[in-house]
Length: 359
Image 1: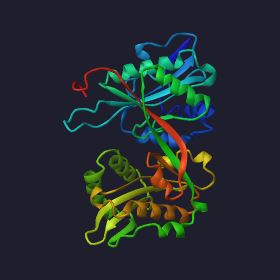
Image 2: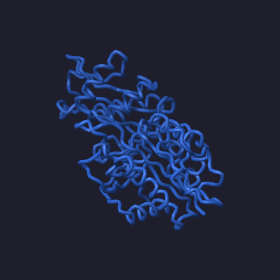
Image 3: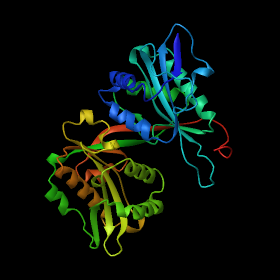
C-alpha cells in the first residue's frame, strides 16, 4: 500500500537529496547546501509530501501538515525508501487591494521511475491541490515559486521529463510558453572584441553595492521591480550576500541607481539560480541574474553594458562556465556568447473557486 505523509524538509534533507539525485541528478544535481538554502530562506507557506510503501494506510487527514513550519504530525524521515516527492507553496504577500494573493506553486513532483503508473503522482497531486484550495489558491503554477528549483516543467528527451509533461497534460494543466537557461564558456570569449560592441553612454558607472546605498537600492526596486526581484535581493542582503555579488549602474550626476545585476561564483555565500546545477558545470561555475535597468534609462545601452561588466567581473574571479537562468531573451544574451542550455515549459492549472473571492 502507498502511504503519503508530510515530510520535514530540514530534518529529512539527506534522504530528500539522495532520492532527488537518484532520479534526476544527472541533469539537475542537488546538494544539501542548496536544498537547505531554498527551504530556509523561503517565506511562503509550504508543504512537502513523501510517498512510500507501507504495510498500513496513512493516507488520512491527520497525516498531512497544513504548513511545513508548523509542529503538526510529520515524518523526519520515511520508514521505507521514498517512491515520490512533491512540494507546493502558497504565494506570500498581498495584492494591490490588500487581499492575500491567490497564486500557488507546484515546486516539483517527482516519482521514482520504477514506481510510475501506480497512481503515486496522482495521489501526491491530489493532496497538494486539496491543501492549496483550502488556502484560497485559485491558480497552481508548475515551478516559478519564490526560492524555486524550476521555472516550469523541464523539457528534454529523458524519461522523467517526458513523463512529467504527459502527467501535467492529463491532469488539467494548461501549457504555456517556454523559458530557458542559457550558458556560455567565459574562457572562450574575446572580451576585447565584445567590449567594442558595447555602447558606453557618458555619465554612468558600474560599481559594487555598498551598504550606504541600501535606501537608494530599495527606492530603485520599488519604482522598477517591486515584486520578486526586490524581495529576493533584499532578503539575500539580509542573509549575508557579499557586496561584490551585486553590481549597480549609477547615474554619476545624481548618484541614482538605474540598473542592477546579481552575480555568483564558487565562493558566493548565497547560491543564485545560475549556479544551482553547478555539479555539472565544471570546476569554475558562475552565474548571473536577475539583471534589469530603469525603464526611463532604456535605449542607452546600459543593459548590455551591465551584462558585459558583470561577465568581465566573473571572468576576473576565475569563473568559466556561466549560466543565466529563466529567460526568454535568448537573442539578447547571444550577443555575449550565450546559447540555450536547458528549457522549460510553463504550466498552470485553475483549481476553481472565485478569483474575486478570498485571495
